Image (cartoon, rainbow over all chains, first blue to last red):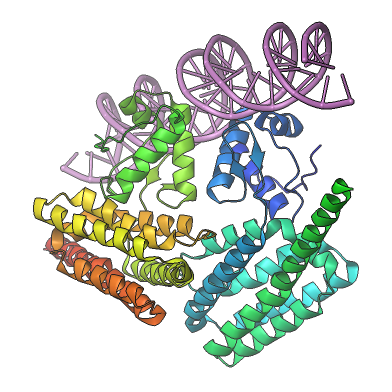
Length: 236
Length: 236
DNA sequence: TTCTCGAAAATGATATCACATAATGCAGAA
DNA sequence: TTCTGCATTATGTGATATCATTTTCGAGAA
């Protein structure tokens, strides 16, 4: 019924935090699809917990706009439409460029090196085709840059946007070779080394566009064509 | 102990929603100060409810970064520091300019008229010195513009930023005459009438800077001076 | 007076229960 | 076959109870 990738549970974690982290991770990597019917009690049973912490975790995820609590006892992953995708992509570009620009003064050579290490690791994971890990690493690459700014407040917002793009992650990484993504990371690193804010913003926008924009649109188009075909068959 | 302005409760609302809305409103207008010690049970008793819906409301507010659940049984309003204020202000400008730019194609004359009506209403409330209502109206003015875009996804993020600036609202509105704010609204309306994206962004940035940026910094400086004085007295 | 320690109280987290309501499925009618 | 009602089941919500842990506060020591 569910297939939520397991995550480590630190002993200090509360149950509610664990559920939240596990669901969040599942949504982030695209393991929860919009079709799946979620219920508080169903999840609680699956996780062998009481409904209380599950309900709290779901409410938090709803506040992060990862899921929607419909109120008529239905919980859903928001359906992606073409205009919504455009809005989210453009918001993501605005936010990440903002974060990058404000992080730039705090970027050090060791930070760039650590980012490069993540990027190298990603090259390995592309080889071994570990797609979920690749998504996590890609986020980690970006997060490391934006968190360089010690006073940043934008990171949770960016994570929320990543969550909303989660349902596309698997399709995206499956659909394409990673060459685009990787190349753009190299461009980001080059811009960082030159402390070139304009080039950095451009590289980030390109990374987002190549990474998820292009594929997202293709997925939606394919879906629309499919629906059209079904509709046509209906009329016959 | 608490002084949470009452809000209407629609019959369809769940208890948890009501608590969330009431706390959110209180924080938004600055009725909850960072010093106030919040507890789940204390709030539940004050509102004559069980702890369950209160805790859920608090968790949601925590996800919206209106409050912090410290984990050691302390709930706090995040303390504002100078660098944090700069981050939030700059994020708010980025977000609202983004939202305005994407709303502009959907702006109609009737929308501009309705925004002008809100602005006129604000002039009245300035006279009668109803500061909390003024804050609500100011947010409504901005929200009306950004929501013109039917596919927007940025509004919840902006509301979260407003929440984080909430503790400043009362101080800000008390500290200054509203002339700056009102004037900037007139500039925003003028830019909208001309469909001038650049002027619109500039007016919004100025509105934020004059409305809360300048005052926020003054409040922090005054607070720092006070702390310094206390520290000096300590040494004597 | 100030600090330390420990008992008492308060608090958050979770499970469980009761209740109202929405979803589901089946029987009978059209 | 398809639609309509109704009984059954499932589900979300909120209150309560319990437990572990933290905070509080006062008594005694320094």
